[in-house]
Image (cartoon, rainbow over all chains, first blue to last red; front, side, top):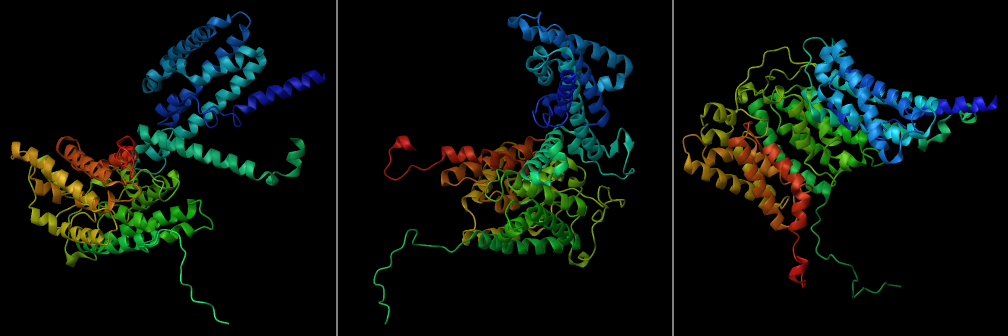
Length: 219
Length: 339
């Protein structure tokens, strides 16, 4: 009974940490290649987030399932093969379902294989934890990654094209910030978002008295 | 009881003081900018003042809001934010929308200065960072040049100035080409006299060569900057372009045209000389200046853009820490190994 309660609270912790406290982009600064390359529109960012989520969750479950069978010496190559399998599935699925998005994302779909976030979760977490914990961790990390991609993609699309999900926001006289859809815009915007995130974090740690007593007790 | 007159004053070095402080230096440079600003108003009317106000407001507001110096506003007292705003405004096109000019000021101080740690820490000239951002964000607006006017049109506002934030101006702009653009794409050189007197299109502060030269001489005389920097830049541009010109006088511009056109004079006098982003030792200063000059000639003659002063200075800004390292003078009494 108590064992079960402890277990579910741990599951919850593993799930939540990827979304905020150990967010793969804002805190761990992993997976920068897709983060900067394909976030020039919200749709592309979301598609990339979903594809990465599928690969991350799938391979985490599989790695966790086989964790006692995989020899230590060849574990990295084994993880890569597992990840590559899911990437291939995601690649073909996207090509069949949304060919336009697939064309825009181009090589970056295949490059999910080398996304250090995914390999990192296998090596650091999935290979050492039972399936349900690994699943909670992977889902949390995937949501955190997709959320970060979406933040960047949405801001870049709003400023760079004056639209969100292709819907025009400012009318036809909008002056697009060309730099935002170009690679430097990705770097700049990511910098600003990291700055904002760190600022929020800093305020939280600097002023613990702001947390209401009720929340502190609960924690 | 009378205090005995001290016969001996004990004091630590330095004994010779110039009394030049950061705010004092900034004030003098701003004073030296006034003639350039007046020339800009003469040729481009009220729009010039509006653009300058917008960039300065953007720069000052950002410094006030984001500078870590407390209490708030103390960082403004040295006047560097105002100077950055003015210099940025003077290298923008006259008909630029005010919201873009304001944004340029924000980026110049926020990204160009405060992100590096404030005054004295920045790697790149803040005003040029602001301009480079605007150039990359709004390439069309930054290359739309309104024709220069005379004193009779001083009250007319150039088209595009009052575009609503995030919007293009709905008025069709009367636009023309800068002397460098005409040279690059039509191979017609504007007479040098027009370049020096300001009878040409271009950024607010860059068209009137004579005023810039006079102000530059004044600043060199007051020792507000190292005279070697503009001299090295101008001499190397003249030398490199003369070499090309001698071999191909038909297709390439004359050295005099190269010196007088575009932002070269303004950049050499007001932007490359920023003491924070240029080398310290004389040998390094020469390397820096010649590097800027070579890059300007390279970009103007063989690059895709008509003008390259901004990128030339920014690139050499990036090289400045390295130049400083290799050009460090030998300490007195030390061997060659210490050089």
